[in-house]
Image (cartoon, rainbow over all chains, first blue to last red; front, side, top):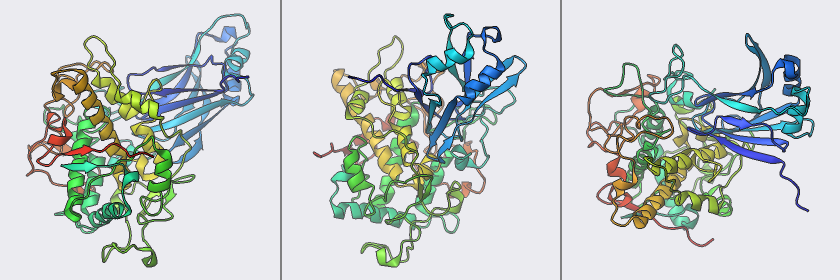
Length: 174
Length: 351
């Protein structure tokens, strides 16, 4: 008997997809991140669900607590990824940290703590109506202040700013 | 014609001659550089500086990365490696850069990442190497016969240590490696056909950054796999850098050769995007230094107006190429014609 896969892998890169489907029938998601904090700043949960559907801040917090993440980066080895819920004027936002800035790459491994698939976990926590169709994914938010010519990002953030101001070392260290 | 071979195919005496050239270059005082800086350190500083070059014609304060994150990645590193190889040959005549064939992981673990060659892969968080000639210092009793007089070890320059200290550091973060042979073969044959889009855009993208539909385990992943200094802008501190990038360069050379064969009558420049073509990734032309006839800093023939945005203390470590002729991307398209001697790659031997 062939067991179903438990892991899905994807890559964030220049020109690549910026939305990662979270309605997956697996318990582990491995995301290779090109230029963490330099090309991509963080991941944010995006969904068509609203608080009226059950996607409330407490439910988002429960979801954050039901996920665990590790960042695999040559600068630091392996460390926990922060998964938190920010409360903004527009509502709650579940965000996943991508670790220290790196010009090369890191790998984020996200797992459900409950053993449920991502699809089952998200459906259980974020919607009161399990039959209602919805979309949920992780949006890779573009970093500002990275060093690529001609792509200055948000005005006032210094599109070509060196993260630490110390030259080459700053391209790879937090 | 220089010939670059797979590192695992080198005989022990060939391996030692390469290591000797590295250690000698690491202790060769930098011409015009500050005390304590070596020619090797100058190459490291250059890699750290290329990320943010101030160039004539750019808006004030704007910088451009001449070496990464766009198509010039391939040509810039080809020139950079060739300059380094020439410097090694000035130390030990006849040495050439070996390449790290990513797909032969058994060979790499058994012959390359061992104390007798580049030292072991790291385990856990980044930490100094525990064995081999790239430690700092190397105990006297463990120095090989070819060890240069006066050398104590393999020191990392204090201004280039990237917070890892004065000894070479590596770490393991458990990322997937190696790529499959099939994935690399697919990369070497990658030709995405889209109207108005040159196939090189996508070949470069996968080669530098990876893509799960071909292989994610390419240049960037290799840096992350080695970890420590290799994960920083000063990655050439780790000599693995040169072997890693020789393989990057080899894959490009293989792709180029395949394209020339597949398109009868074509010339090398036909397999590089036309200068005005817009990137399918961001809708812009390639930045300065990345287009076919652009000069590649620091090889700009001493043209005025260039500077780098880097720690002022690091600037004196940068090598001076102002008296060297300018070099364009176009001039880097054929390995056998990059200079009077040229070079080529020998295919890996049987495992």
